Length: 467
Image (cartoon, rainbow, N blue to C red; front, top):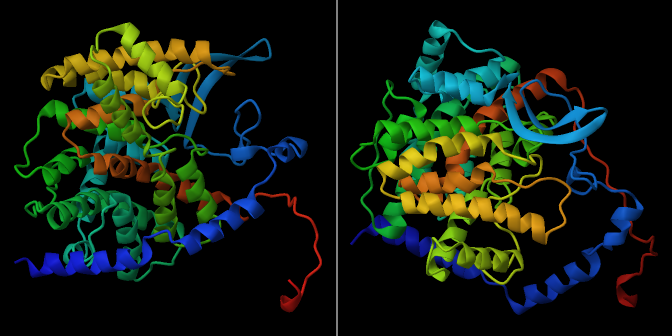
């Protein structure tokens, strides 16, 4: 009998049994929330409110300046905005060129990309080696942290496990609340280094205590890259192919940063502007990234394709696939939300450069894994979805596949469990969050405080006995 496992399961089941149920009392109170918190949609138009910090054309409201990255989806021609193929720049460098650089030189790119994002320029060979060695030295946890913090309270949710671990690291840092740039840089680099450990150890603990799997804990190897260490620590035999490590590294590079306006990065800047500590800022960003409208989107893509495979008898039949996609769009299939997941983006119109770069390598991986039929299905859905959405929906700009469309398929071919899809995103994006936190602390002097207009009526107070 596994006493430790039984104790954990009993404690968690008892806790959940007390608190997880929505009782009739809660349902009654919920109805009050709807009655007194629902705002007339017409008021948003009346007061010209930019919901989601976006105008009626979907353009983001300018709230700050950054030198870290830039997204371009339009060119200006004769004073008018014209949609163009999407471009993404890290510190002024086209990401496509960065990728071509380390791929051609047969190197891993995530460490170089992290250096570029944080320090604002590309490292030379000596600087890159020193930086990689620094991350390797930082790639360790406090004594007994894995046992006492990660393993004693396993969670079904890997993002919550990661956030809890980050907040707990605050207790191990003697200068946790020091927000001088030097100290914040030290904290950020340490978090970048340990995110893979926190993630993979949290997953193995979950697998052991909830699914009865053997508990496997591999220590990271200093000579390996971030991508290689993820695969080394995740797999029981620590084995992986060169192509697998190369494509995971590419995924980390493409997810590392995406402008200051994405939800989790903006969260980082908002929270940082209050003067709070690094651990709290990063935990807030993790909470944002966890949402299915942000970091969890690729999971929805994979689930949608699984549903498609169950409901379409012939994957090669364009007519059958088109019918399924139209049913998804009109809320008659999959999750009934009316979204073809992985298609469209808040900024890009004609193309998402990250998806285009990724797609170049997906075919090779599908051949190595014997899943070329699925790759062809993905390519067909991408092509058909674009036409269907353009024909069936009124859209103000073009629609194309975004990076989530292929990333979930790639992760499944890498045998990454679904529970780790969003945490892998976090392992990459912590680089961008770190760069933005440091930039915010260096340049900002005011707390970020957007305005909300009250539309409630003024009412006279009524004493308790008269209500």
